[in-house]
Image 1: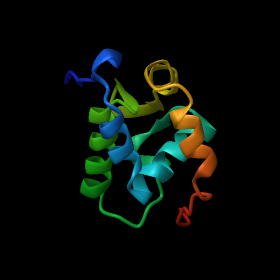
Image 2 (image 1 turned 120 degrees about the vertical axis):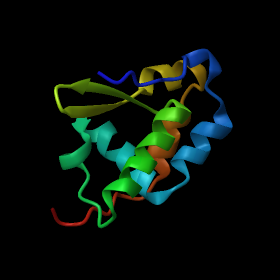
Image 3 (image 1 turned 60 degrees about the vertical axis):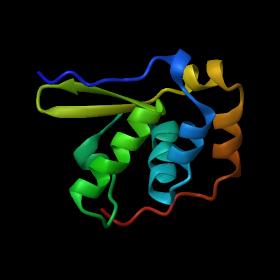
Image 4 (image 1 turned 180 degrees about the horizontal axis):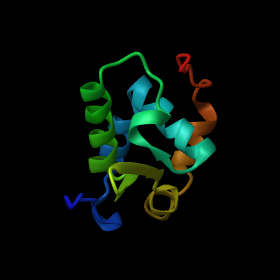
Length: 108
C-alpha cells in the first residue's frame, strides 16, 4: 500500500491554502466535500477534465493541507480537513465557502 503524505497542521500556511482554493475546479471540489463529506476520487467529481488533471488538483489540495486522502482497497477517499484548517486559520475556510459562488458541476 502506498503511503500518502499529509502535512501536519503546524506547517500549514495561509498562502498555500489560499492558492489551493484559488482555482475554480479545486474550489468546487472543496465545496462538494464540505456539503457531502468523504468522497471517492474517481466517481465523485463529474468534471469535464482528464483524470490526470483531476489528480493534479487533488494533489495540490492535499499538499496544501486542505484535504486528507485515505486508501481503502482500490479506492481513494477524500475528506476536507476543516477542523485542522479552522484550528490553524479560524473562520477562513467558512468565509471562503460562504463567499464562493454555487458550484457548477457537469452532468455525470
